[in-house]
Amino acid sequence: MTAIYPLLATLAAYLLGSLSFAVIVSRAMGLSDPRTFGSKNPGATNVLRSGSKKAAIATLLLDGVKGWLPVALVTWYGPRWGLEDGSIALVGLAAFLGHLFPVFFRFVGGKGVATALGVLLGVHWALGLAAMLTWVFMAYVFRFSSLASLTAALLAPVFYVLGSGGFWYTETSILVSLCVMAALLVLRHRENIVRLLQGKESRLGQGKKKPV
Image (cartoon, rainbow, N blue to C red):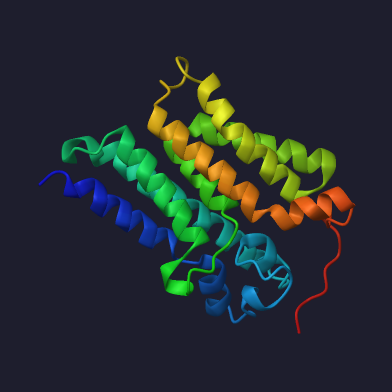
């Protein structure tokens, strides 16, 4: 009977991840659907292009929470239901995949940066903080959000290994999950990578026209 609990937790995490808050928040605030303008990516950065910083911040926070919450709940309460490190890896990856391929939005989702950060914070606050500081540093120095996101994603598994014995003990299942998320984040940013190589990627703070 206990074998079903990891499956139920993973399914619940995927369904939570499938809540596309970029679309939900935009609708609630009477803004244009983020899938219809700019990069057409349902994420906080594209919501910001609508001209509403409040909507973008709300999207960013909610997308992060939906990655953090399943991992945190399994970490806190999972052991009594037989949910160990393998389940933490599964629910984190499931929430992330839900954002990328949301069942409620025809499996067309965002790039997953905020949700991935939420997962990292759920695994351990220090891991999330390391990734966040990496993003801030890269964004400040180079002014490319995509480059900052890619760097933070690729270094997250490295940080996890380096933190072993100090903040946590490395679990193979969690490390594999982080590596899969990093690989998927790179794939979701492939167009950005091309633009970076061509010198055509937009910088942070660069003016954007509002959608009509």
